[in-house]
Length: 215
Image (tube, rainbow, N blue to C red; front, side, top):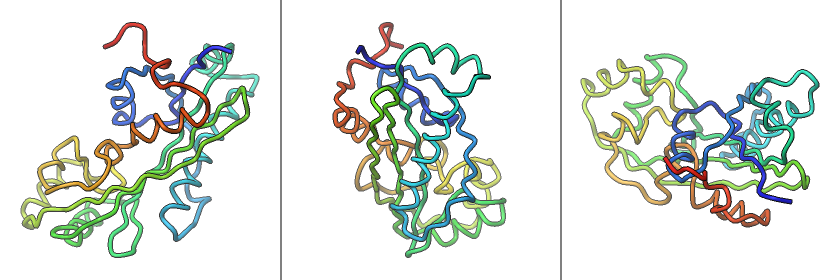
């Protein structure tokens, strides 16, 4: 069996850019999994479970007769499906995406000058071989002690509302992070070193997934 097609079970632009920057051109497939079905208080268990459920939802789409065009194009070959989910833990409390600007402002007023833990769950499902690798990566994030004016200006950009941690390290939010301890790409959306290890666990070499025409 040759190298399977790589499917990203997420429409996150940041995760897509990370994979492309690493030479992997994935097939993108939205999972549409209802995250409210999972209610866990442990950050690692939460992100791992959500990542797995998202990946499993995508796998199920490959087995439907009325497949979407992108899935139908890939269904003739073996695939591996990657599902991811991220949360920020601050003082023992787990946070996902803020619901509105007011919540984002309140969150940043709590985050500033503090240290948060960004957890990302990774679920890699090998459909043809019916195997899975599920792992979590954690990175410590040291937030700058920014002013109310800066918080309000940042939230007004809309960027924090699209991110589980209420910030994008690869966007304007990078201005308000003093330092990271751990994997940098994990904070963006997925850990590239961990992905390499997980592919290895499933018997693949990450370089086999490199696009033949690098961007």
